[in-house]
Length: 314
Image 1 (cartoon, rainbow, N blue to C red):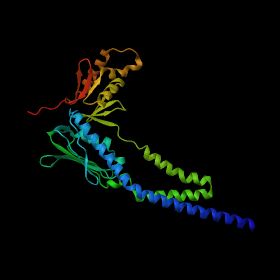
Image 2: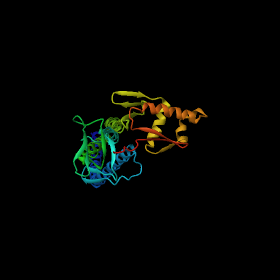
Image 3: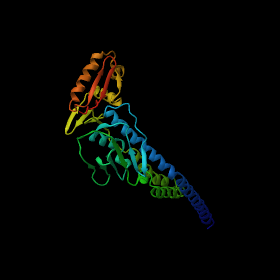
Image 4: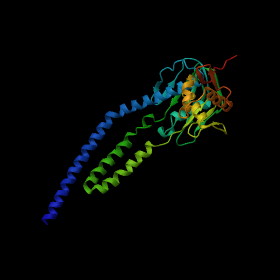
């Protein structure tokens, strides 16, 4: 009886202490959540702002404009951002779509998003599409080129505050973890491990989620991983060196890539002549001929430039 009573008293004391610890930890968790909710929302808005600016920057480069400025992106209301431009330009519908899907993947935006292109002069929508994780995407007017004009691009994210930070849900998960941890401390190391491992696995699954690796390149989609170009239903295979050269040129799209930089592709093979580089560039030009607006321009004695020259309006 004495042993049982002592054991019961010890267990009850441990249970009481564990309960107090759990309550304190829960209180700290919810207080911290209340203070960080707004700052996290602001951080996410800043991240979306920067991604949208990057989309604008790449669109201008693909249009052959490497000098004009991308004005600051403005959030006119929660979850709605406006991207404006200094000068008129031409853009490809598929390029805007692929840039958006590549930089704004569905995995980060469960509620999807809508992209609408407005004409600056009369504010009408001249092009748009909708990406949705639940219902089918709406991808209209593919394969077309929007003529030179003044455009404003509107990005709208429904339930923007819940895109990555769903606080009631996080609170529930946090409470469950804390309570399970407290119970696990009382019943032993085995139960502790079995309670925590599923949560860890779920976190790893989210972190390792895959994102698209296709890059918009004029009318092409550039699949670097599989060394190929996609143009509609056509697939154009690239050699290892062709892929590396094209990747370097695309990294500096609209800008000069020095010959010395491009010849680093042969760095492991010792001495290489400039003629080898010129030969591979010539092969790339043939494979890119499916898009007559996309060109690799030779800057004599300096290097090459991958660009879309400005379209002259008659």
